[in-house]
Amino acid sequence: MTAMVKAEGVHKAYGAVQVLKGIDLEVQTGEVFCLIGPSGSGKSTFLRCINHLEKINAGRLYVDGELVGYRQKGDKLYELKDSEVAQQRRDIGMVFQRFNLFPHMTAAENVMEAPIQVKGVSKSQARERAHELLTKVGLGDKAGNYPSQLSGGQQQRVAIARALAMEPKLMLFDEPTSALDPELVGDVLDVMRDLAESGMTMVVVTHEMGFAREVGDSVVFMDGGVVVESGNPREVLTNPQHERTQAFLSKVL
Ligand code: ADP
Ligand code: MG
Image (cartoon, rainbow, N blue to C red):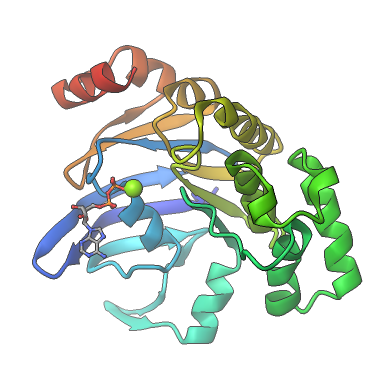
């Protein structure tokens, strides 16, 4: 079986600053893969590379067996055309720390937008699907609300529904609960847990160690642009082998 995400020696620099220094990892299809590590370790950068928001400088990055952003012929890599990049991107959903909803659109309109614009789905079909998805994230009664009329947790659940509307094969979450008041975190994690149970492949950057332990199939601890330690969350989080992992966990647990 092909891994959903495969990174081989992935490097990324911003100018002279090396941020990713050779990331090797595999995310299996259907698994919940948690990425943890201190601020500045390169977690967001790695997700952004998977989702074509950044280009890697060296190594190989594959999603579902395809090179991200490139085609390989012999030893040479050729950049994909914009239309081909767009084709790869539409299969990947991403949820950010800041929900980034369109403020002038209702919850339902936010969820309908991409299927209509990108996939050419009819408005009535998109609306029906939006209502299904909003119901799934517990917001069936908020379809007509604007983002400003929703709590942070509700906005984040709309953002999840919006990403799901494109029927992605991979969902990326970048600290989806970090900007939320503590009492709103649980509802968002519950939605993510349901999604995990439905079999979605998920890469989750999080500081919620309870979620990583209970829902995660794998965890990777990153520090300084490298993978320090990885494995089963119950093992890594309770019995970390590396000093840097121990130091990090002693601060967040
Ligand atoms: P994390 O998500 O683990 O906190 P990031 O991937 O956001 O880490 O950042 C890793 C490093 O890359 C940080 O030192 C950050 O300052 C740097 N960085 C991130 N984005 C940029 C950028 N667009 N330009 C320059 N440096 C960046
Ligand atoms: Mg980050």
